[in-house]
Structures are given as structure tokens and as C-alpha cells.
Length: 446
Image (cartoon, rainbow, N blue to C red; front, top):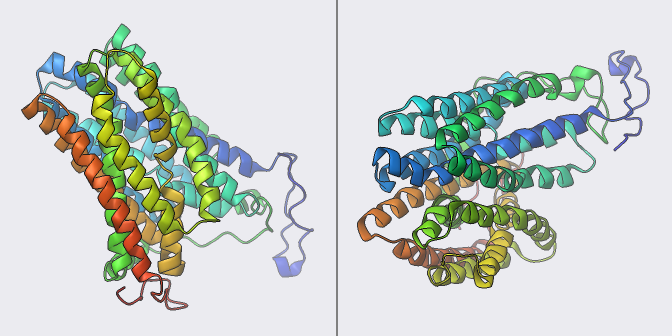
């Protein structure tokens, strides 16, 4: 990954700055640290799924009550994401990520002292939700936009896949720790890992290439960008207000809300306890869920490749329809052991898990032009809103009915609905994009 010289020695026109050269460009170290933080963020968010049953057994709290904490976590994770980039522009990447890791560590560590269910909501819901939300897709966008010109798309894909890698690494480990020791041991492990990453972030996660007197990887040296004005978050809210007046926004947001409900909210949160209901050991179920993360990496890459070649509306229609059919079949696949049919489901679901992201990002750019990334932030918030509702609803259905079957069937029907919403986007293909120079949505209703 050695970099070539990024720029010729500066002249007086370049403000007298001579860009430095490095054998290995610092951008790769920034990307590596960002990847570690993103892997950890995904693992931290996944932890409650292995704790639902132990918390229920120890405190007697209903699964609906425990799931409420997961819902708050998912909701804040989504709502924080649109503002995360603005916070990083305002205060710097390093400060925001270090603060986020400290919030995660505090939220996880304090759970060992809790005695009431509201304390779980405060710790895992609020603190961990805000912390992980500050290390979401907005974080990826800021890092890649500042530090990379060459290979920007590749690095974006790899960092996005960090979420899948987090599940792959953390879930089996945390499930084993919970089973062999206790859920408290697992919670303290998460707190400790988050703290360990803080000095690494402080050391290598630089805010901007210009701090080191260099340009981004594959680009030329530029003067540091000025600190973003305090109204950066206000700009994001204004973009939402204008996007919300268009039909495609609601179709994309509705489909992505269902995407969140059928992934993080339902499968990510309740697959392990649902499998346990059928006699499967939690470590085995956690291993299966971790495999979703493994196939997720391949699915994301393939989906990105297809998005360049196939209409994104068609891809979303296929992805959601296939997901719906698989969820309708899932209740019949649960058993005490991981038989081949369940492994096939895991393989398919992993490939489909975040395959929806590349075409959704592309459609946001197509419909909303320069404001596409900001609008996608809000569409992503709807993803987490759907996840939060599904996490709580599935827990309540399990408490009331004694089984998860209704949740799986309902999610399957919703995914098929998302397929229809995606195909309805064809009606808005001719919608005019953003008015040039504004940077906000001014398109007419589709």
C-alpha cells in the first residue's frame, strides 16, 4: 500500500507549503483505525442479542421490556447518524470518535450495577445507542471523503463491511463468555475493548490530511478546510424538510424502514432467543448469526458491482422479495441443531443483509443530486426506526403468544411490501433532481 508522491513541491501560489511524502500514506492508518472502531461499534450493538435470555432469567424482566432497551439503542443509533458528520465537521473526527467510545464503555460497564429495567434502557439504550450512532455511515463518509481520492469506493466498501466483521468477531466470543461465565463478564469485556481503542484513535485517527502537510491518498495537497459553522446540523434538518415533500423519499424511507425491521430489529436481536426456544444452544445460534456477517461482506461487494450494471429499483425489488419469502419459511427451519436447511437460510440472509445499501445510496443520489448523502442519512434513520419498532414488537409477541412465529410471518409480509414500494419508484424516474448550486432538495413531488 505504498503511496506514490502526492504532489510536486509547492510554490508561492501554494502558500509556500511543501507537501510531505510517506512510504505508507497515513490515509491507510486512518482507514485501519476507522475499521477497528467500526468493527467494535458493530460488536457493541450486537451484544444485547446474547443477553436477552440471561437478563430474563436473572431479573425476571419480560422479553418485551428488555427489547425496549434494544429499541432505544437502534432508534438513537439511527437518529444520531445524520448529525454525526456535522459533529465531526464541527469538532473533528478524532474527538467525536473518542467521545463515542467512552460513551459505549460507560454504557456497557454500568450495566453490571443495574437493578431496574430503566437502568438497562439508560445504559444500553441511550449511552451505547448515542456512542455507536456516532460511528455509523456518516463516519465512513467523512473519513473516505477527506482522506481518499484514489480507491475511495473500495475503502468505503471495506469500512461498511466492518459492521459485518464486527458481528463475525464479537457474537461467538460474547456468547461463549456469557455461557461459561456470566453476562456481566461479557458486558465488562465490551467496556474494556471500547476503552482500549480510545488511545489508538487518539494516536492515528487524524482529522484532516492537511494536519500532516499532505494531500489525501491519490490527490493533491489542499489548505485545511475551515471549521464548519454551527448551523451544519440545521442544514441537515432543512434537507429533510425538502426531501420529505417528494414521493421517492417516502418510498425509499419506507422500504429501508422495513429493511431495518427485518435485519437488525428482528433477526439481529431475536434470532438467538428464538433458536433457543427450539432447543438450540445459544453458542450455536450466535455462531449462525455470526455467519450472516461473513456472507454479508460478500453480498455487499456483489451488490455494489450489480448496482453499476442493473437498475437499482429492480435490485431492491428482488432483494426485498427474496427476503420476504425466506422469512416466511424460517419458522419451519428452527430445530435443536443447525441442519443444512438452516445453513442455506443463513447463507442467503447474509448475502441479502446489507445488499440493499448500494442501490439505496445510488437512488438517493439519482433523485436528490448533491444532497443525496444527507438525504441518505435520513433514509438510514428510517432504517433504524423500523429496527427499533421490530425489536420491541417481536419481544411483546413472544411474551404474549409464547413463540416468535407471528413476528417472522409479519416480517415476511412487510419485506414483500418493501419490494412493491421499490418497484413503485419507477413512477418517479423522471423527477427533476436538485436545483444546481443550492445543495438542498427542491425537486417536485413524484
